[in-house]
Amino acid sequence: CRCSSKSFQRHCSRISSKKVRVSDALSSEETGANVRIQGWVRSVRPQKDNLFLHLNDGSSLQPLQVVASSHLNTRDLTFGCAVDITGTLEKSPSKRQNVELHAQHIKVVGECNPVDFPFKIKERHSLEYVRQFPHLRCRTNAFSSLLRIRSEATAAIQSFFRDNGYVQIHTPVITSNDCEGAGELFQVEVGSNDPNPHFFSVPAYLTVSGQLHLEVMAGAFSAAYTFGPTFRAENSQSRRHLAEFYMVEAEIAFTESLEDLMKVMEDLFKAATEHVLSSCAEDVELFHKYTAPGRRAIDILKSSSQNFTFSTEWGCDLQTEHEKFLVKHCGNVPVFVINYPYELKPFYARDNQDQPNHTAAAVDLLVPGVGELCGGSLREERLELLSQRLAQAGLADTYAWYLQLREFGSVPHGGFGMGFERYLLCILGLHNIKDVIPFARFSHSCLL
Ligand code: 4AD
Image 1 (cartoon, helix red, strand yellow):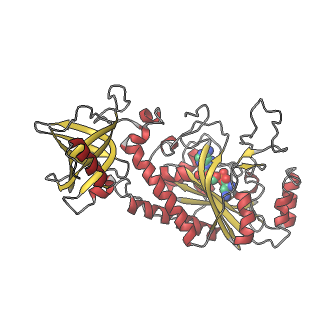
Image 2: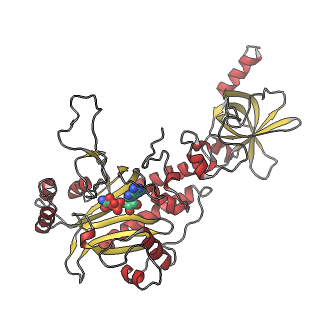
Image 3: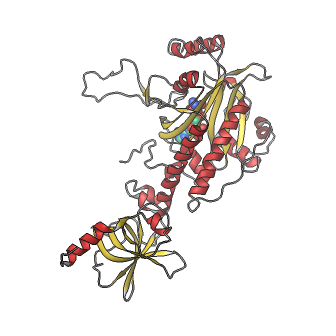
């Protein structure tokens, strides 16, 4: 550049510098490279001749140390402000990092008043505290780590299914069925001023599960999966329930045993967790090795000396306290519970006619710290039995299409759903489901 104006030269140097992310800069072997990095300031430490700051752009947990000499204008640099920095990557004398950025030019793109900013420099804020700021909490270390892990886990789950020959199906968010039959539905209606509030002519809801649509697809693709938002109008503020959560669901044709289903659940869990542990090692603690027990859950509960609030009689559903006890009893490892009382399971679950108690071929995977992570079953593929069950429930007309699937090339099949947020709680050892979703929705709360 032939222009002598200093500001113009700085402008030119910014344009000619290579734009890099903090994670790339940290792993760079090359010193002396001229780079440009944009991000947010995580700490500012003025010293006699230099000012040190930590810069983060969300690409890694570790920030990049930036050294700015006193001749640069550093007046507006505060914790939380957005900056655009050009300089050279140099070997760092500190043991904490390999490289640091020696700034030649710093531009404050967005100021941040540290007095008003809800997070304070060097302070460790509790997860409960940061939850109050859903629009800002991704700027904290813990929540940005969580979202990186969430992103990697999503990719790992997609890869698992793709590598194993499943077809991904975008099952609808709006549906006319209540798959689980539990009545926990959000009804969809157009605004109250609209002359035609019954847009679909039939009652329509936000999906509680994509299972029935996946069963349609398993009848053509053999193996199908979906991974999307799921809605339950559960009036619960518990640490394990959300009104909107993400569910991974798989449906597999030509499956006749719960063991086959359990194998897929186990493989999915292992593959996703191994990927997360290796790709986000910095962010995650090591996870315990997976094992499975082989005793009757109901016997374990009944023979224990524990004083449960809810009944442990055969025919009563497992409550959180029972799930916790079973996991602990088995040595704090994931536990499969199979063959539930028939009446407890939805209409689609397959009748285990050969079992002494009347059971459904259903399986739940319980995990430490969380309880139920996955729910699945073999599906009733026999036309007569399914017709009877639907008729008894008064649902024969509603599910005429579902019955038809059993008329045309029906095959034994089964599937399961895994709550993605509960999976994250489990592998990270976190306590509250509101801390593992970008924007939590639960009863009496829909911030932003
Ligand atoms: O056990 P669920 O209700 O099973 C189904 O919906 C089946 N139709 C899935 C299938 O077979 N395709 O839900 C599956 C999982 C639970 O094990 C739990 O992990 C999660 O979804 N889940 C919730 N997660 C967060 N908040 C809620 N309110 C949840 N309800 C269920």
